[in-house]
Image (tube, rainbow, N blue to C red; front, side, top):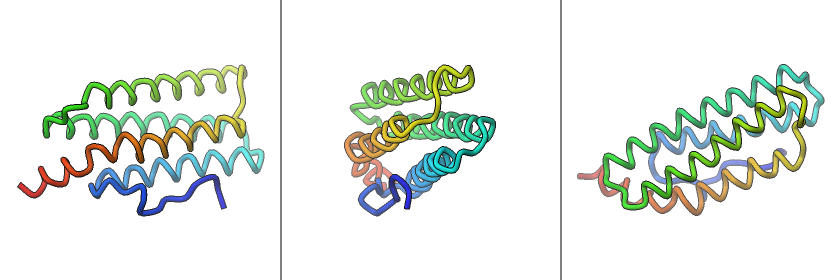
Length: 135
């Protein structure tokens, strides 16, 4: 078993976003497995790059949808996204340059951020998004 597994408590009731969140969980799990099994730096760097790209793609879609529904906390939400993408880019650069490795602390940060973001930040838009989709 990995660091974290998807469960319905993470659902934001928006199928596209739930599917993307599940993919983010899978990428973090892949990175964790690569770290545990001592896979090559190239493999771990590739997973980090995929995580960074996928996160940016997901955040862009989520932000477009939040703007479209007039989500009142959009600015705060988007700022959280920027902080995370900046941190991932920094971690990727440090890993690529050999300044830092993939550690348990990094894996805990990724898991904790994803859980906190989905459960505390994304859940706030869930009901509004569901209501708007019914209209």
